[in-house]
Length: 203
Image 1 (cartoon, rainbow, N blue to C red):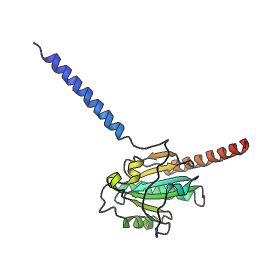
Image 2: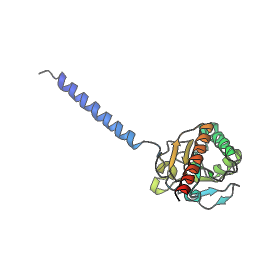
Image 3: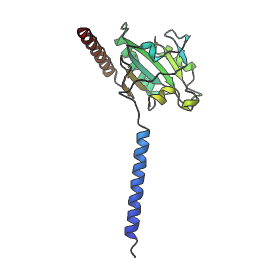
């Protein structure tokens, strides 16, 4: 009896099962939640724009505004090379515009002994950021990994999250060019004005 065809079928079945498993794993690991309502942040530790400890900052505090969030870890080279310069330039572009809010959160998922809460204030001072900044280590429900990393399905740091005026996630991915971020925010502001104008006409 020739066993070669039997072995060949066995290999084929094995490869099919392996591919199916990999596809299933990829679906579970899918990053980002663009198009969905933004979950509340659940970050307990915050400093205000002046570097002073403050009460919990919530997404609901910025209802009706565009929210730009940069997540980072203090030991992340890309955060310092790309993330914070992008944040600085974008903040400057909307200085004095109360329709846009900026926050930054250290989303701890590794190196907890190095990416500590005191590094948040150090980072704020280093880049002269006059915005609220948080420290997110999660809790038992997230296996002590960042709430934002878990609920927004972020893939690491630096990570930028952009939320529109209706609380919908419109960008949720790795680094975005500052000019692209500025253009995107301007587009959201313009769209919102058109929407408000349309609502007034209907009324």
